[in-house]
Image 1 (tube, rainbow, N blue to C red):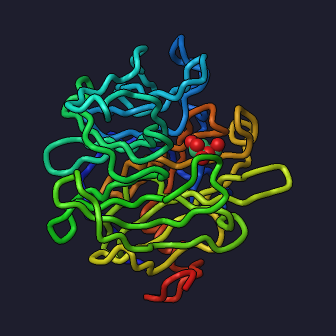
Image 2: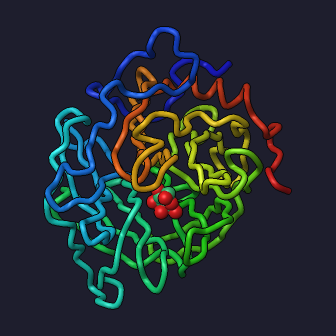
Length: 337
Ligand code: BMA
């Protein structure tokens, strides 16, 4: 069993939280208020989902994926007092970028937000001759600056670590293709300056079942005494198309490309109406996790059926115990090798 209070992070005393319902046997439980953001929260949106949330200024801020009614995929900034009721800007984010070649915004989706040192970095799937990883930052969720794309196309699910490792920024990503990619492993890359990325390392391969087709990192990894706690999505190809579920892994603290444990069963899969019915049925897509270090409470934000934003809860020690006890990876052994 993991020791209690294993999170290396800060307190979020106002983290959204609901106790596990009586009789619930799962390690992750859904908010009774789901979906917390409906598809039409702002007038121009077809759908709002796969969105990133962080503590900000005693409250919460976020970057939201909102596909508009032309079905263009764009990013919006939002604020909330309680992490549940959101005010999302009606106009999409317009990134300030020094190089128009990069700054000509084609499309953006599946944002992640990560506080590192002095600012909030935003990564997202950015259209540049195909999907790749866009990188930007903000100090205030009003002005957003865009940096160089991290990688060549095609790539998705760029997820930063919340601190430098061995003096370098670190990112997980999932090399892809230009379509509805039928493959995909998670890789690790480093950068001295958030501009040039290298020292690429393979982290995790697909296995079978719910994570048999492709996998991708979800929220910013949570640092714990047991390793980096990574919640990720996995995809199964059914006769009715892709099914997106979520699992969790513990990555080595110093060398995160080494998987120490990884769940064999999923921790969350599409089962409710708002996860099974929508623009893309049967999708739970975890993107952000708030974690209150003193209590270990985790509030997990995920997209439901590519249509709405949902919230689920877990507790860090309980999740770590679950990952260790249901792991397909013997200690220090790599998956897929
Ligand atoms: C992936 C991404 C996600 C989406 C998922 C299911 O390729 O596009 O944004 O949630 O497909 O459609």
